[in-house]
Length: 141
Image 1: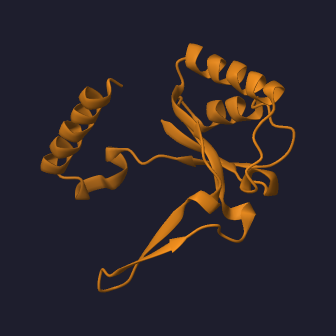
Image 2: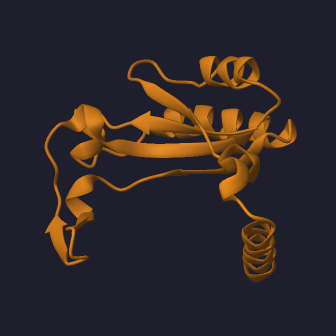
């Protein structure tokens, strides 16, 4: 099972405050634990929304680009992990060990091919497998 652990932004992270050396050290140690346990597939911090943008789509497939920053800091993402574990309980145990002193993370399970039932035809599964293999080959993952 794969889970995305979404680290919510704070006012400080949205204002561009960088982590301290101690915070980076603690996060590095935590990330190393995840890697050594074989559960971390990816994990990154994100720049503040002031450096980002959103693309809105309408019913006619026309797009509008909206530059950040965005309001409602509590709804923004400051970073993430993708973890592969055996259960919801396992991912919860890992997240509880994260070295945060405040804030909130959201945990969401990533869809797998089997979750789509009959809509995921053998042809679509084959396409998905081909794309994953290509991405792994391109990026050495």
